[in-house]
Image (spheres, rainbow, N blue to C red):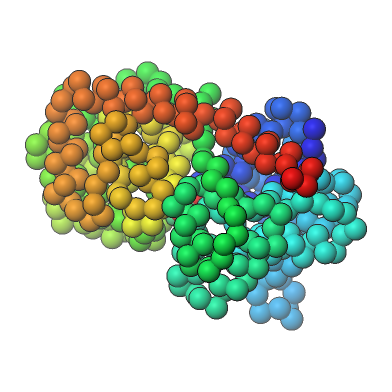
Length: 375
Ligand code: GMT
């Protein structure tokens, strides 16, 4: 059994979810897990034997213009590596976590192995600030092993960073004990959803890249053909504009803005279809969460989405921004009971096979074994 440190952004977000769920599964297998982060990761919501949390305190001294998160993190990592005698430090995101890990390793007298998992936003950051390219490249090349959550992210990283660094694809997963279809008719009643109405759902952090207006515009077409309601879950910078768009389209009585919600599996369990129409998405963990609850998805032909949705089998892939095509696919699926049912069954099957948490856990454990034996 290994002693493994994990660093992630602890707030809501797919990367934080994956890092935490991975830590929990590894701990269940007997590994000793040490989270090093600025807050308790939000999914670490009870006491787990074998899991320890080390808080990174970021102090803002008057001499600093900005609180030094990166340095505080590196110092804490070094402290935990030495004191807890870590074998592995697994960081999620190259920027700044891999850089901090490398600095921490240099400060210690221990041959801790650094594993970096890429989730996509490093590459988005690079698109905005190319001065960070060499820094991200350094973080990736100096890590002992690097993984990415989709093949698309591997190619994008290699292209943008001009690197031939080997990157393993290890897909994301969900905890099947939490994500499954539950019976919850009261929730439907609570939201005044009629028996003949279909439920569409979108879950995101309402950043521009998620293209929530495309979801709303597609829904405005869909609800003309199929009686339906749209659940919008999450919050973020585009929230008020989306609210205005719903008003402008005159569909306020059909769209429910639910804000941030903790128990999305309950909401997915009353849904018939999920829309994720992003312009950037390295994987789309929310797709897997939906599929685990038997909800077929329509996603865009972007990034890792086509690796998660198998077009025509578990859901549909539409062109980015093609509202007519998205609405046509949705109407076709929602008005054909057999098609909807077969997509739903296939979606659940794929979650339990290709993306099964046990398979993904084995892949990470294999990687840890290789790195510890210098293979
Ligand atoms: O998409 C976001 O805004 C959040 C970000 C994160 O840090 O959680 O998501 C990234 O990592 C997720 C987990 O691997 C992936 O499912 C998301 O596709 C990825 N987001 C982007 O690539 C934009």
